[in-house]
Amino acid sequence: MAELNTGDGGGKDKKVRSKKQNSKVDLTAMVDLAFLLITFFMLTTTLSKPKAMELGLPDKEDPNEKNQDIKVDENRTMTILLGDNNKLVRYVGLLATPVAGGAPKEFTYGKQGIRKELLDRKASVLAYSTAKGKPKNGMIVIIKPSKKSNYRNLIDILDEMGIVEVPTYAIVNEFSPEETKLLEGK
Amino acid sequence: MAVKMTKKSLTTDMTAMCDVAFLLLTFFILTATSKIPEALPVDMPSSTVQSKLPETDLATLTIGKGKVFFDLKGKEVRIETLEKMAEKYGLQFTDEDKKEFSLMEGFGVDIASLKSIIEMEHADRAKVNQPGVPKDSLNNQLADWVRISRQANIDVNDKDLEIAIKGDAKEEYPAIRKVMDILQDQGINSFSLVTGLRGKDF
Image (cartoon, chains in turn purple, orange):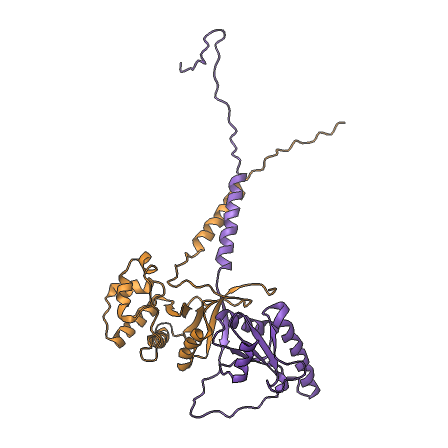
């Protein structure tokens, strides 16, 4: 009854059959897409979480009752000055009389720069302290961010402390005139 | 005797695989929390630190362009904090304001104009140029916000409030130091610095 003629009218009576379609759908593309999205959501949910760097500062001292300065061995201290334009100067010991090889010198941030120096100095301080019979006295790093240094510099150097595992470090805000000159001079 | 290879069908049935894939997909979409747009977008510096920022009992001080924005986690803590702040500054907030405040993102305005920010549409808040929470020594509202939210957190959750500083990478050190000083004046000597993540090989 409901037959469709293909039109040429002549000859044999052709029955037009609907093509038998494959009942299976190819799901490959769909699965691909699904896994792509899964990967995307997995990565974005877990990787974008911000990280927190713990920072402990010493108690603020009352200016009226200044604590007595604690003397530390200058052979153990390294002072890092942070300047503008990602400048970083370090010296070991006292500025006027630096320890051998510790004269003020400019370094860069990162693996090739200050990290190498920190690791070297940490090893030599350890050797020095062990020779004196106090192997627990590790390196002390004094970080002095100048007014022109930015927050990234501070985070970078604090991160370096964590990577190198410096046992003692402190952020000090006081600049001596010589140190200011040192940062501006070079 | 001729060995006949059984002819295997080339197409695998992927229905089950597809099911699993979409199940997982649904799971990840639902667990992914939509990111609330920040009032003050900052470019965080990155570090190698692995520890995550806590999700609750946290106050975030966002520092960028010389401004400080204050954000607090937890609805009840926020309402409690707002009530106490309103009391201190002699302001009135309706219940609706409080509810809206408990859901909104960080803010950076004087408490006197906080009401107008609360009443704004969500999308408009980012457009107004919020001047930052006042932090001068004469009008140190930031210190009050921190102090009162710490109290509120102890009252509500019986836990100490953690403070996180989220600074812009290009922010100059004195601005960060100013905020650290405000925290230290309240005896908060330990806080977190929010950073992004990077590898050790930089």
